[in-house]
Amino acid sequence: MELALALVFGLVIGSFLNVVIVRLPLGTSISVPRSHCPQCRKQIAAYDNIPVLSYLILRGRCRHCGRKISRRYPGVELAAGAISILLYLKFGLSVEWAIYLAFCAALLVLALIDVDHRILPDPITLNGIWIGILVNLLLPQPSGFTTRLVGWSGADVSNPRILALIGSLLGIVLGGGLLWAVGEAFYRIRGIEGMGFGDVKMMAMVGAFLGAPLTLFTIMVGSLLGSFIGLALIRFGGKTREYELPFGTFLGVAAIVAVLYGDALIGFYIDRVIRPV
Ligand SMILES: [Zn+2]
Image 1 (cartoon, rainbow, N blue to C red):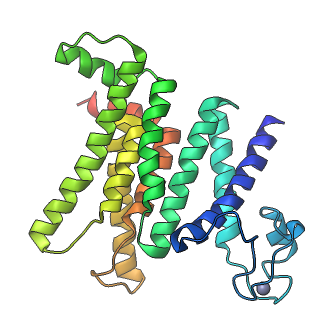
Image 2 (cartoon, rainbow, N blue to C red; image 1 turned 180 degrees about the vertical axis):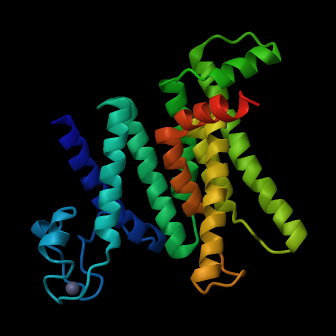
Image 3 (cartoon, rainbow, N blue to C red; image 1 turned 60 degrees about the vertical axis):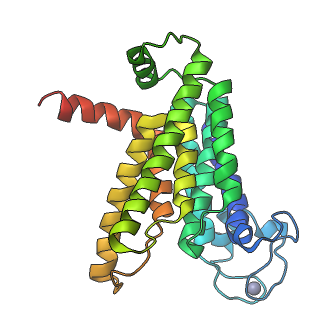
């Protein structure tokens, strides 16, 4: 029952995200006008706007003009539904579930807007930084990394909120700083703007939510993913080396993996790869 609720809620969120992904980069209102077919401009009735189901019932075509509806729409809805279920399996129906669902929803929006426009809008990334800090202050999660680092520095901090705040700030500095440094190095060496400042702000947001270890995980997984897909696009997709990859997309996917499985994967890596050496 709760699982079904998590799924339906995720699908509805996904339906809303579709609207945000299309309208936010255009600067138009998210709430008005009501959804319409991008091709014939006819308004979409509520009964034709049910996540995934309507797409299946209409066989992927607009009721009015019969032209194809992008598979992106049910895809985003299914992705949000799946993320909601996976978060439910991790956190149950809890405040954590709601917060991380909102965070992953923001990442999904950033990932797809970056694919479409090669931008990562400030209203999401900059507000995300503040919200990430607030979440850590209000719902402090114990972090072995921050506790050890603070202990090692000799500071006497035991308040979980202060520790969580320090963890969040470390994540911002690491996430934003690392991407800024890579972009700067890229610019010095090749003389081209390899990374927009949007990526820097996006990783500061990820750092604010997830803290330093998972932020490093996100950057590593995102870079690996970007390298593989970049090489595949050059090799098989007919793209040249000058093709600009949507790095924010890979970072977004990696950050969602970090939320769901980052701690488990880092633990696995330390136990199986680092310790035996
Ligand atoms: Zn139409």
